[in-house]
Image (cartoon, rainbow, N blue to C red; front, side):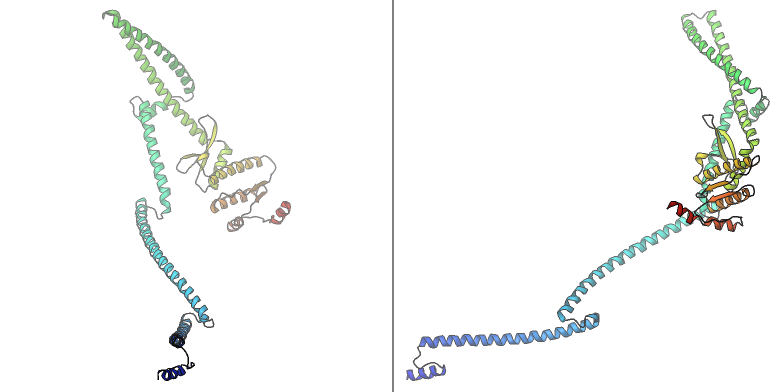
Length: 416
C-alpha cells in the first residue's frame, strides 16, 4: 500500500515510481524555492508597476510645473527638465538671498541718506542764520566775509600795536602831540640830524659803557670808604651822568620816530608821483583783475631790493608771492603791455605775438584782456595763438574786432 501511495505521489511530482525519498525531497525543496521566487517576482512586478505609475505621475507633475514656471523647457526630456528646474531653483534661492541683502543695504542707505539730509538741513539753517547776521544773500559770500573779518581784525590789532609803539616813543605825550612835533621837524634836515644823532648815540653809548665801568669801580671804592665828602661828590657825578644818558636816549627815540614817519611820508609821496610806466601798469592791472587790485606800488624788501606790490581796494598791499597763478600772469601781462605802449610812443609799431596767455584766466578776466588787446590793436598788430575755441565766442559776445585763422592743419603738417 505504501508503495502504491508512494508511486501515486511520485507520479504527481512527475518522477519515476522507483524514485528515492532523497530525490523527492530535493524536488520538493526546488519547488519550494521556485514558489518563493514566483512570490518575489510577483512582488517585484507590483513594485515596478507602482514605480511606473509614480513615474507617470511625476512626469505629469514635472510637465505641469514646467508649463507653469518654465515653458521654454516643455520640449526637453523629464530628466533634463528636472535638472534644469533644480538649477534654476538654486539660482532663485541665491537671488532671493541676494535680494534680501540688497533690500537691507537699501534700507541702510536710505537711513544714511535721511541722516545726511537732516545734517544738511541743520547746516543750511545755521548758514542762513550766519547769512542773516552777516547781512549777505548767498552762502558763498560767507567765506569772503570771514576772510574780510579776519583781515579787519588783523588790521585793528596792527593799529593797536602801532599806536602802543608810538605811545612808547612819545615819552608820555599823546599821539596828537607827537604828530605835531614831527610836523615841526624839517624833512630836508632830518637825514643829517639823524646821522649826527647816530654818531652822538654811538659816542654816548661808548661813554655810557665807560661810565658804567667807572661806576662799578667807584661803588667798590665807596664800599671801602667811610661815607665822607668824596663819596657824596662821586655819587652826585654819577647822577649827573645818568641824567645826561636819559636826555640823549629820549632825544634818540624822538628822532628815530621822526625818521620813521618821514620815510612813510616819502613813500606816500612816491606813491602819488610814481613812474608813468608803473602807473600805466597799475591801470592795466586793475582792468585785467576786474578791480580786485586797483593799483601797483613800488617798494623795497628786507634786502633793500625794489619790488612791486598790488594794492587792494581796501588799501591792503599784496606781494607777488601772495597772488594766485592767474593774477601773477595778469601782472606780468600788464607790465609787458605798458612797456609796449611806452615803446610805441617813440618808435615804429612792433607786432605783439602771444601764445595761450589766457589759460589761467576765467571768462570775465579773459574778456577784459581781449578788450585791452583789441584797444592795443588800433596802434599795432596783435597776434594771439590759442587752442581754446571759447575765446572766439567771448570776443564775439563782446563785439570785439578780430580775424580768425585756423592753423590746425598747418601745425599738424609741421609736426609730421
